[in-house]
Image 1: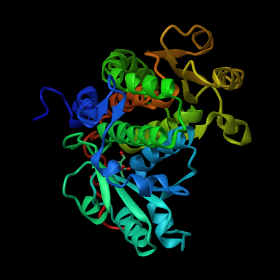
Image 2 (image 1 turned 180 degrees about the vertical axis):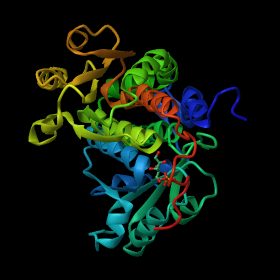
Image 3 (image 1 turned 90 degrees about the horizontal axis):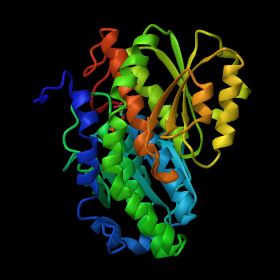
Length: 366
Ligand code: F6R
């Protein structure tokens, strides 16, 4: 059932081109310039009347929520807040009837997320679920929703669930932006077309496997690792760090690159690998100067760059090249080499990749 792969995690990483296609199949019609999702269309007025959108989730799903925050605000101009379900439910949060709450969960069984949904419903909010497991508790408890259709995810470390969640959320954001008139026609079409190209670009990103394995061999014994990103790719830095921690037990932290100088830069020395997501996109020059700051303190730089990049290549110790896409969709590609890097490091350290210690696939206790 691992289809020749050594681990479910690796199989699921490689399933992502197909999984993403399955996610948008029947929903994305790039040629006609249409996005159709029943759960959204049936509740369009609720979405359009929302004064704000609250996203609740845990772990990797929370990271997908953060990516969604950047995408929703960019395209729909509706303010978005992303909450850890556990903090939200115990905080006596402000929830209004005009709020739309989006709950994201692969398993659909996460206890804290489920409790956050119940709380939001009690306050009269409209709750929309983004789940992978069909018929799960969260999919039943929400008013409406959209499945990710990623297929079963067996590896405890979430991979294809993450990229398919982002795909669903991007579809929703673009559809709402179209309905609100907050995106130009040409931008809307361009993003639909780019979305359709994502599966083949993910294939290309998977070709970084050998490079990722080589880099893994060099840093597998590092006690710490930093991950940096900006904008749409800041949450990818968090996700990259989480992947490394949970399966390889190396201490890793993700940061917005510009926050470095407010503390973490003190950690940098020649022992510290720093993974930087340095795509050729908005704020590129800023990330280049962040890389220079690390380099001048002798940190080891592993940069995830856009194909053809030359500037970062000159500064970095290692580069991983991935195809270019529009900024908003780049997390779908930048995530891939980070998954592979964690995977190889964990394998080299002899860790149980599919069932890391102390972790469970669905966290049904709070
Ligand atoms: C990380 C991971 C966890 C889950 C989290 C939420 O790889 O698997 O952080 O993302 O427990 O789970 P779901 O999405 O099932 O609610």
